[in-house]
Image (cartoon, rainbow, N blue to C red; front, top):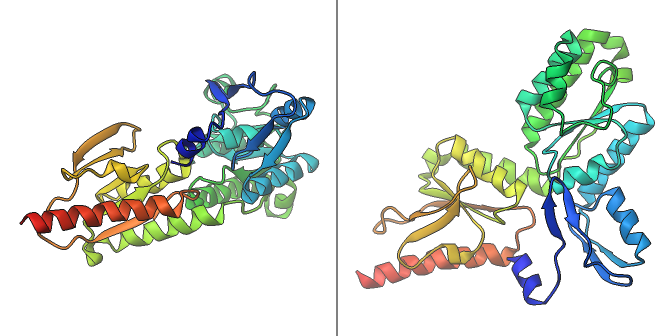
Length: 311
């Protein structure tokens, strides 16, 4: 919705070309360039400086905190292990500040890295799996002896912490507890706004039966990583839930158009029993405007009012 408003104001967007590349041909000398919340890579900043553009930097402070963390890794001679999606814009920006890095998207990939640290293994198979998620000339035989943990700020807080514990135990097992600080370093870089929402929705899910929840509504951009993670929490717990990007997804005919965990956009019946009071949980992405949430709630209230009046 924010992007739609910017488009309406004739603000031009940098086109994504895939594989982390973007088309900057429309950026001219002296233009005003707005950096998004997830920032820009070191190379992109150099390019914009060369074009003498005026930069409006809206990079989230938590993203800057991650960059400072990986910078410390490099100064300490550590390889940065980044819990994140290697093709996500934020992670692309983060790895541009790293000399040596490997990205792990989840606990399964973290376990693969830890197993290699402790036991070694098939180097060729390991590199084939992580070929798009490692720095140039990465060597797992020499670059995983000293590591530091960082993360994409929108990842699961609990998973990042679990990966950290896994890494720490692996280093203790291989090098002993006395030398742990020489081989492993971490610093909490999970975004507060993301963490609070994850904690809140976990609490909703855990108490869904006691609350009598009919569903959980998640409001935020369909391409938002942190919003998509919020949907996964109730979905994996079997709690009925919907991810919408604007109020217009809720229709007067009691249908809802929403994004599934797989990324598919579907339309289905929304409120199952219009005769009863609806009990719902509501959350939103970290950067979702409050107005988008309020408008979505208003659509639900209006839908109920219209149904009550009709009956």
